[in-house]
Length: 207
Image (cartoon, rainbow, N blue to C red; front, side):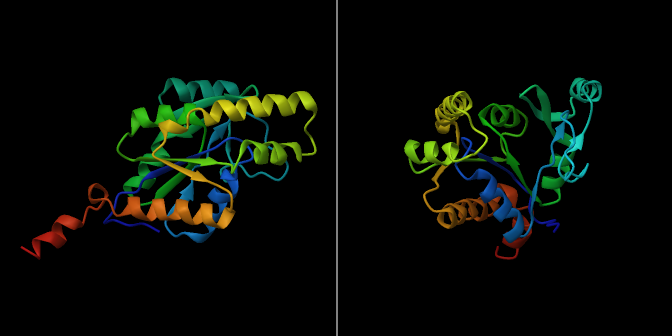
């Protein structure tokens, strides 16, 4: 859906692993018109069920490095030895057409993007209901051994410590309520005067 009367926004959603961020992002994509998930570029191998250009843009390390040198990314990150990047041209094109772009990234990526588009970013942080609940959620993941679990909890606490860099904080003790809170934030931000191109024409009819 293209909306020529409104500039889109970049909705950044961050959280520690296990707080429900991925579920909320998927519900926004499936249930709200005019939003899309940013497709990242990555150097990791494509899995059997993944489609290039739909799940990720798969590049080798040389290609990724060249793109980075050409300033093609809004943000980049290294996760478990693989590079990830958000395409600047695609995101800027989408928001100019009135699309809202969702980014599922951490606090470091959020800082990078804010430097590029400080007026077009809306930052939401998702918290679990308690640290004990987060431990339960991560502990139930079958692949976790004790050392990996401790590492994930350490990373989660580090992520949570950056909550105050975000515009909104939503506690996910009920996924539907958390989703509705994020949706309300999105709808409210869409109404900002600075994002509505057609407002000036409408106002002229009142004066």
